[in-house]
Amino acid sequence: MSSSLERALLRHQVFSQGPSLGHLLKLYLDTQDILNLRLTSLSMNDLAELNEVAFETIYIHTPVPHGRKQYTDTLKMIGSFCRRVMVKVAYLPKSCYPTGTPSLSTNVSSPRSSSESDTVSNILDSYCPYAEPPIAWKFVVQRKPSDVDQNLLQQWCEIFRLLPQLGTVHIACNGDPAWPGCTDIESALIMLRITLERVNPKHIHTVCLSPIHAMGIMHLRWAGAGAYGEACASTNPFWYRLKTLKLGIFSPYAEGRLTKCQILLFEKIFTDYLLSFSKTLTRLDLSWFGEAGPDPFNVGEDHQTMKLTKTWNRLEELRLVNVTLNGSNLNITQLAPRIRKLTIAGGTANAGDQVLRKHWQDQKPGGQDNDNASWMRSRDVRISAIPEPLFQHHLA
View (cartoon, helix red, strand yellow):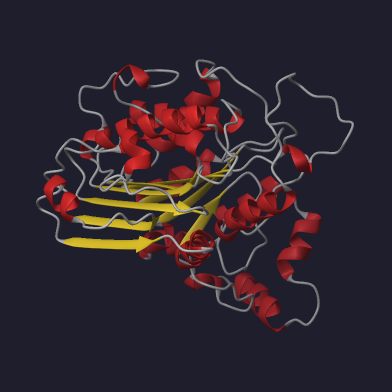
């Protein structure tokens, strides 16, 4: 049960008309002191022992601001309760950097428009609604896909080894929907893919990539010789055990975003990526955010390079959102003879944006935050270099 001190602090937080207690504590305690306070909390210990559901979902932010570290000791206490990990890969777009700042590379990715950058930022923040320091990272620079930071890779492996019961991995990133090449964002995706392949979680059954961009999909290839950085060495990788794949892709089909050759290359690689799961998936969700995209199970004449040829013998549920409609769905039943549930939403004006907003609102844990809600009722825990104030709706 709670200590007298904790009950008094919580009462002060709920009924005080002035600054929140969490705000005051952050003024006088450094990061390590705040974490130590939480680790010695009787309520936190009771919650870990008696209410395992509180730690089912853990949020990880990357990149970590310079000079800070991940507190893996904290993760060791609760990692066995985790069933789902949400990894947010969020670099500031170049348009947000101060003008006149010297570049670290002569080949910096092209900036997005301010409105598009704001949209992506708002989407990502709906999952993790507190801001990292704006100067924690300054550039999104070009990388070689083979350049993998082995020290950082080992840190990622250490984190995922602390999650033995992990069943679902959700990766969200703010990559450029155009053709940025291999930037810090794509390098982070490569590292996450290699990490999962090295750790090879035993219980993983679902991977969700949403939002993800076309270049992100290309750098997450794992099958055959197409993998970037390091080929999968396991004879029984977790990819073979996946049952559900959910993709929410920033559409590359907006006019002028990609050249014809780039579109053809993306469609070929995307098709190969989908077919690498054709033998195991029981559920596939595909949503295009923004401009409507093709239906790979029933492509039109303009997207023949995306035509699927293999049979999906285990696929039972298929959900396609914001796709271009091409008449009969007979081809779907031929490719997936065991299909039981089929949902198709055709593309209309602004449909992709509406789907995107709804998707993130539905997935946002707990709905709208309530500052007066009891922190004891939280179902999510955020693990990050910078903790949130104490006694908020979400534990941190």
